[in-house]
Structures are given as structure tokens and as C-alpha cells.
Length: 91
Length: 91
Image (cartoon, rainbow over all chains, first blue to last red; front, side, top):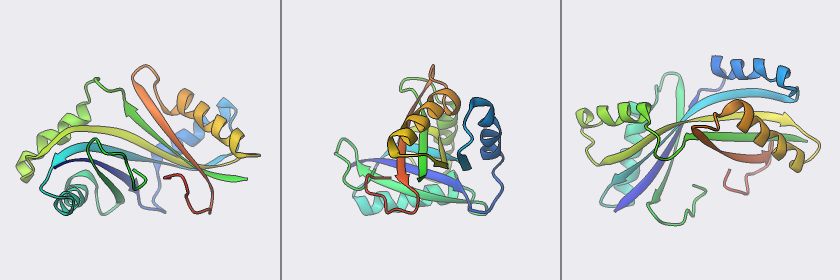
């Protein structure tokens, strides 16, 4: 089966986010003074072939933990759906 | 009202994604040979104060188009929910 996976990698809460601060710093000059807590993360998507959804989910979690994120400073969230299917789980 | 916004910025389909290619290049050495079409984007989240949801959505779209993305090479998707509410729209 073919799956479409999305992994969102965020800095752990509480850690300083220089990219987010840079965005925040540029907001007032553009007239936006009502924005706070800007955090910038990564969004990775890809397709994979796997025998079933359980195998796909296990691999995507493994990829997220070992390759796509740095577990010391980041957390990740995984969304998986069968490729070409209509998303049913908020994906 | 207080809103929580998430903006996902992706490279336009068809454009070369060097970060995605770098991820793909490292997959075989880690034993994953069933992955393709890796694309790396940005995920930005923040909070904002706005009088109502319409005003918040307009501002977040404006921010995404003018500050958070490069419309020449990127597309963006916006998700908005009232802060502290349970997500009802896939957010």
C-alpha cells in the first residue's frame, strides 16, 4: 500500500526560538502588534510503500525520531493517510 | 478574542527541493528504501488577539502572504482556532 506521511517537528516548549523571535521582531514594522509566541518548526512530507498502516506508522515514527528531528530539543507529530484517499483523521 | 494560528509553507509542486533531496539521500544508509517525494516546508504557529474570527483569518492570510512565505516559489495553508478551544476543523 502507498501512504502519504506528514511529520511536523517543533522546538520543545520553553526553548528559545531564534527564528520565531526574528519573525516577531519584524511584525511591528508591518503594522501587526497583536501577535505573540511565534514558533517556527519544520514540516516534512513524503510517500512510502508499506504492507499495512501499522508498518507504515512504525517506520514514520522511527524516521521522525532518528532522522527528521533532534529528540534532545525537538518534538514531532506524525500524520499518515493512504495516498489518494480522502483524509479522515484531520490530515 | 484570542486565536491560535498555524501556517504551513510549502515549496510549490515541481520546484526542486534541496532539503528534501538531502533527506532522501540519507535514507538508504539508514535502511529505508521505500520512501519517495520528500518535501521539506516550514510550520509557523503563533497567537493573536483579534475582534472576531473573520478579522483574525484576514490578518493571518496577510501575514502568510507578505511575511511568512515567498509567493513566487511557495504556497501556504492556514489553520485558525480560538485559543484554549478544542479543535473542530482538523487543526
